[in-house]
Length: 542
Image (tube, rainbow, N blue to C red; front, side, top):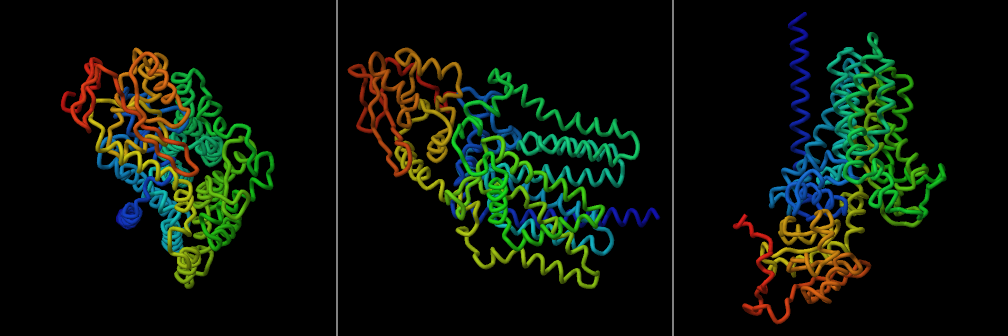
């Protein structure tokens, strides 16, 4: 008996190790593919996530406050040490490493869950089918190559699924702790994770055979630390515990009162979400996965996995209808453009699991053939059109970044050979920070609106506190205002470069001129002045 248990445990470890190894190689190959194409920072959100992670350790005022208040912190914290490396930051590979590891973990947890749910000879075949379907979707493969946070959340979600299924079978306190820690990671990655907590707590309460209340309370206590921490963080940093929800940089604050399809309309919210799902997962998998999820009614052990994996989709439909901050635009529905189409991947793990359910229901002698058929059917859309243009996550990032990439490149090419370390740049944050990443200028060289109290002093009294030699502004922003105000009674800035790109804000680059007191070394020199003693220390001096 003991030898059989040991052999079974050894087989599980071997299977899991093989799955992790294959998924790791597959992930690395696709990261390399998208890196070679220069696509890693096409998403504006990917650029922002990368730079937020960088500024935690590399900033004029590095530290805890640089985490921000809207985007949840776990992906940034996981990325910050990698982003501190100049090469990984400039190439955007810092985010790819974190997302790639998350993708591998998500696939491994899906595999282990399917192996546990589907007993007997159907287990390995159904588990392999689910994992292959999950791992061969190019829309997910692109996101796992970038600094987007969907892969990290999928890893957390599928870890919750695995540990809850394990708890149902073993009644282990360790499984409860594992589920709680996985849910905690989910709540610190995406707000979808908050929506899951009451459902998982209820499952633990029902599935427990002994000490039900204690086990459910333990899960809830661990998992709820994420939301409680974030309320406290927002209150501490912004004096508003709900700043992430209704603050000026929240999704709701950015969207404002603008209408989008689905707001206040359940039918349209469902239409736009299900269309995004079809674009992300492919029509064949949508039909196969939906059939498998319906069939879970007849497969008792598969009911909970199906319910849990469907909940993120429920969250997005509800959010589109009610919250006013999560629009989805797809190219075949008005306004026929791309925005948040990646939200369609919220149902992708559920569809992959549903496909595995279908395989498990086929007679044993035909299961291998059924698994191959399911995998092939799911891959048909990508085999017919095997190019990034047909992958909506890549296409959205490409279409929406054309102008941003153009002005980022032009501004970076101007600054890179002219900027001298230690002289300082006043600027804002957000998309404009891509200029400095591309130019290889560390963020500690910049003064932005995240650097208090230096920033408000510089923009309010530039005559006294604006010491940066360069300014990079977008028309009408606080930097442009401060530079113009400084010219009245303070340092004079000369507009040396205007970057104009169609359908994009004008980027202006200013260089400081101190009037008659300046000493010009040569045509390309940086000007010295009596104020130069206040310049930032160079890397060597630090």
